[in-house]
Amino acid sequence: MDVDQEKRLAAEAAAEIVENGMTVGLGTGSTVGYLLPALARRGLSISCVATSPRTMRAASELGLDVKPFDSIDHLDITIDGADQIAPDGWLVKGGGGAHTREKIVAAAASRFIVIGDSRKLVDVIRAPIPLELLEFGLPATLRRLEPVVVREGPKSPDGGILADYHGDVEDPARLSQWLSATPGVVGHGLFPPELVASVLIGRGDSVERRTVRERR
Ligand code: 5RP
Image 1: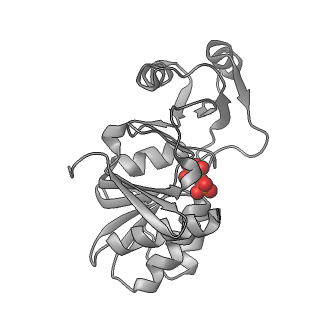
Image 2: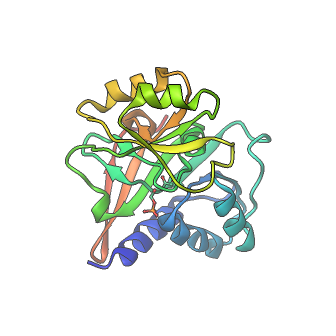
């Protein structure tokens, strides 16, 4: 299996869905790294919003028009990668630590398209689940969330502490609700199926398409 080819094929198929005049949310990660040049090559007139400084830099260097996300309140489409994709449409995102912004940008779009290689398809969602935590009161938050591991490395672009929850997942909806309701949790990497329009997976030399929900 050529993972990079699978990522590239999924990303190129997603780039073909974008139409002239659209507002487009751009995710973060190596799969999105294949999306950006594919989108730039199409030469469309589109306005983009980036989910990370890394994506913003890369997209701008390719000539894509990236706007700050305080000037647009709705996106036509968002395209992003994922770490895990379950059969019922639950996702885990945030391997790259961008999950808080990624969820905001996914939720702002009429269509959220997930792209990935075939390793991303899982039978059930498992830990680790990425977290972004407020630095204030961090020891108390970590105590509530145990077992949790704080990541080495920089904070998020919004000053959040990046960590991973290593407990049981069992029911992603229940865990998602609990994490969202835990004081000190800024964001977590469980994305519900309601957010996801479709999934494009590179498999070998072709692309599998799954519709998760109809257009909003
Ligand atoms: C970053 C993410 C990425 O989309 C996810 O980690 C997948 O990354 P890659 O495309 O490199 O496999 O959620 O926060």
